[in-house]
Image 1 (cartoon, rainbow, N blue to C red):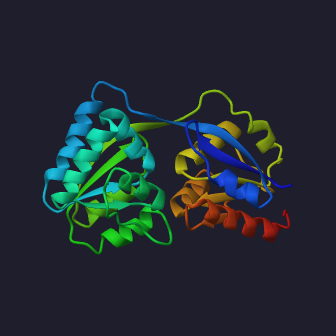
Image 2: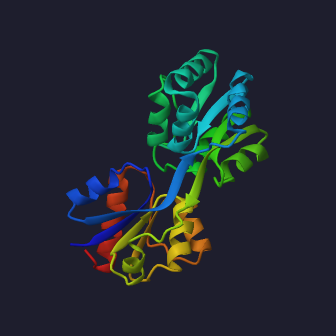
Length: 258
């Protein structure tokens, strides 16, 4: 049975493991990163500034990760945030997300219309959609180390970008239990869902063995891996668990590992 490492944050729920188990893979989930809501003294001021942008004309609320909504919920409470976003929708604010998971996180708060890429669930594909719209105000809750690709791309197209940090993404300090197994080539594949996961693994392991298939979700994560000197075996276009499983099937079929 082929073993697959899923790099996750400490609090992550995991549908990938279920999809892979159904296809005969053994999975190991290890928290190389920690995603937590910002708790500094200025966070409430940043959230007020961020959500204050929803009152501006031609405004878009843009979510690049479901972690952004989870953080806002923790800071404001589900009911209060739901009320704010539903009123924003009534006032004409439009909503966009990088993929179906983040779109669902917004919809669970009562927002009915959320635009997101149907095929490739990446910031690059979301930008392709947004650049066809009239430039407006982009309100983006973000991580302290989030990618600057989307806000910079929108700014270059004449958008005004209001982004504030509401959650922190950090590499865990203690050595993850899977490090030695990964370095020894005991995993057939390892899955990276974000650039921060890539940085965390390379930081702890130094390198991923060439015989281990490296699976990246989207071109942004793939580029981060390549920039870190890591090989990329396959890029999953979609972010759903089935997309990840398909990508692993394809990658391992090519190498004969499955």
